[in-house]
Length: 139
Image (cartoon, rainbow, N blue to C red):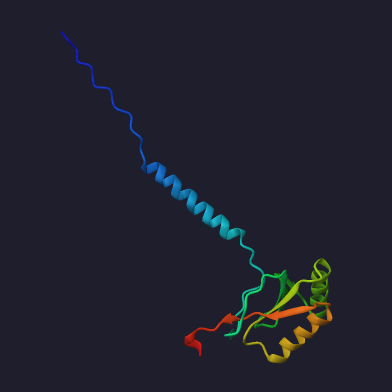
């Protein structure tokens, strides 16, 4: 009696698991790069302006929220004295840094002016006001 040998299976490369792995790596690197983005300041509703410009100078953000709370970057300040100390510390770290005033659009004008005066008296040479770009729909 003669036995037949089964035909040996040909080796083949499965590509679907490779594609899954590549997509996983792509998602991983995208999320990692988003996490590495430095988000400075506290989220507020900024006023809109058509004449805004982007700046690449060294900066730190001073935020005034709609509820009247102050922050330097994301560090909260209990009052004006604590806020002035935080701003002075930033100025001592980098004397040429630009202070970005990040005030909610619902905050009263006088409070923003008082904040700008405090920042200027803390030793900041240059400051700017953060705005959102104005689109045609808001004109």
